[in-house]
Length: 239
Image (cartoon, rainbow, N blue to C red; front, side, top):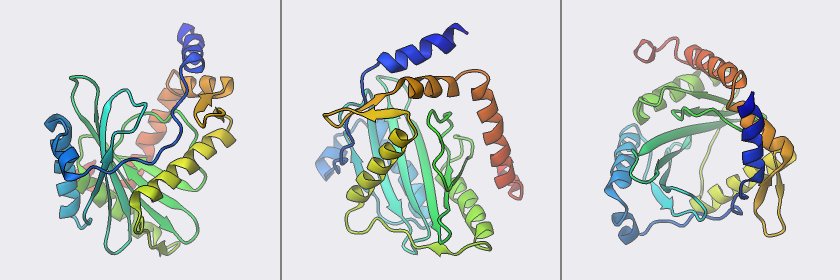
């Protein structure tokens, strides 16, 4: 129980999150100068995404205030059935972590999301988001196979709304980030500081910490594994 008291205090007394900022795009020189341990796994995942029909990527990174190296790739399908982003990060000399997320919106407002990010979320789910996570050792191609399987099943209930980031993909992502921060504030997890940064509330620090501790962590993990099993039950290769 000591952790249940200490973790909220650590989160509450910790520094605020940086104000939401538009991610800078990498130019050719900047992308080429990235550490190969970060760049190469990202390029490998992007190549796999393009192999299953996603278009040209936009590479971005270098977000101020992060305590780790990170680079992202934003992609979308030419048929506008899905958007995707791939996030590669590493801390110090540790291994590179690569996670991908694919999303499709439907006319009834539901947002279908499929990811291979394995972490336990520390914030509440957004209304209307139907997300599942497949195991992280599966790459982008199996992730797309699961997402496509899910969206085809859901098309019987509602038509797909075409999705595109338009002519300003990084502006689109900035607006999405601002919307996510606003949601966290409305839920009572954070409050805005005068300089635009986010500070955890006492309530938010407690809830975020407890989501990563027993028994909530175990309950969330069981729920996620059950939802994933339901999503892939007709896909034997992913059992």
